[in-house]
Length: 432
Image 1 (spheres, rainbow, N blue to C red):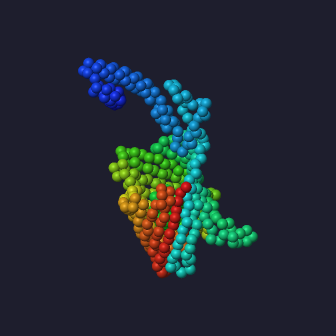
Image 2: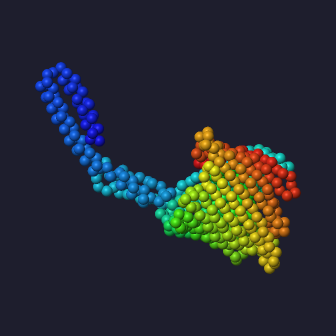
Image 3: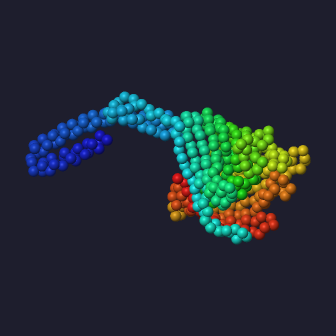
């Protein structure tokens, strides 16, 4: 910096002096040079004085910002102190830290609109309004947080029925969770979850913008019966580094399926046998983007007919969570054994989805393909009415912005005893 000041000084002071020296004698030139050197020395002294003042005051702002960053928990609103509490610009003393405020509520929304058409007999084409979803997060303290998810879904029978016509939308509390975070290694929570029994069910929630495709795999459909999508109870979770393996765990205890097996036990379990689950997965540092894991789920189901079944669900997944490519593969086996009898039924389902974000056109296009399969024994009383499936999904996603996308999808599905069904779907999904 000192050399830069010297060069500027020589340029500004020297140009007029040297120009005048061209018209004087050698004695005058030496006097001018001496004067120039004197001015440069004064300039250097002034630069040293400014540098010392700058170094003395420089740490004030970074120290203040660092203290605020380390004391503010994630998700907490940062409210500036009143003007009377702010230190003057030239004060060298410590500046009071800004304190977080609780609770601090934040909202995020998702929605989508769709157009569809299929060659299935009795189906109708047209526009439909997708789910309207709100995510609510609130820090209650530095270690206690709340998360909620509420959806509104359009009803096809809106305005029908007597004496009270059906409303236009069904409102549902999809998730409501309070979490106590002791550390990254241990967190305890209570509430209504998306059951951590497979990957898709916890990675992609009710905002369709979150997932690459328009549709969810059939085995993990909301309102589906193959796996319990929702779980009400308590959950312990955390991470164990294990030398870069990054082993994660989830262990839960709560209400199992309701008498309607697509519903969770929101108002209480329908028998005196709690469901439990264990989920383990690894995300190794050396293969950043890879996740591999498996789950076990145990429950006792009491159907509306009063028949009881023990249910074991084992599942596994392997996911490459990068855009070039994106690979998701999952498998689940559901075992049902009727209480008091020896008859046992095993149902299997799996899917594999691959996608690739094209490097052209500003990385906005992402084609994808998914194959999925479900096999259910006809004699399984728990899954009566759940059809087998062999299907393919081909589509692309175009990101209009960082918060909105357009998706187009072609589906080809075949179920036993039914003709193959072809359908086309178009969706705009967004977050706000």
